[in-house]
Length: 231
Image 1 (cartoon, rainbow, N blue to C red):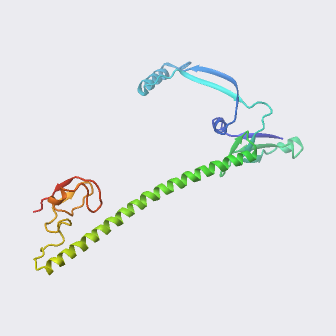
Image 2 (cartoon, rainbow, N blue to C red; image 1 turned 180 degrees about the horizontal axis):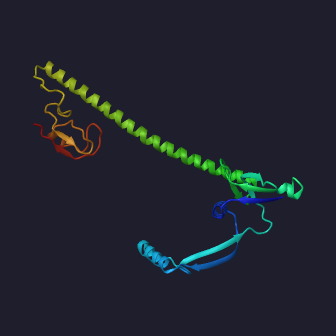
Image 3 (cartoon, rainbow, N blue to C red; image 1 turned 45 degrees about the vertical axis):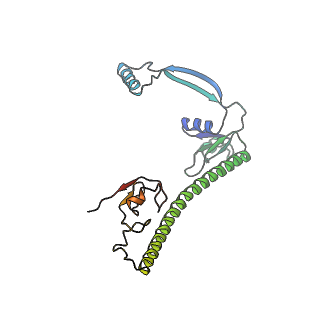
């Protein structure tokens, strides 16, 4: 019984290299670039080299084979080549073809089947931990943003309650409350806010109070202060 591997040569060599197959080198050669090319092709290559800034001297070629008697484990799709059993006269002497399945993995390795399963299990666990780490990291940033948003809303409600308490106390003492309570500075509760914290965009303090602060009282973010003039 013979088995043929039905894969492009470049893909087969790539699989062997990725899966750790040790090939015995039987030929190593160097082919200079531009040998046998016509004038137009040579000029085109020179222009491409000048454009890329890299001069290609040539290509090193190597050929390798598996040593005789090497045991290889292959996982793929096995199909019987039509007509080979009838020519040989035996169903067991048929020729089979190993090819890459439409849906599923394809492996060619010198590992045994238990070793291959164990290595794939380690790889899957490693990727599972990587995925879990990215999930936790993404969840952390999302929760952090939600926490900041909730904290800002809590501080704003607290400022409004403090302002309402201040106005009620002012009325009890016989003072005149300001007319526009919506635009009062949340720090001194006397002047209208006329300053904006540049980095976060919050307007909640008068300029006299804001320039004494290094952080916005709502989001606690360090920011510069700019005065706003309204007509």
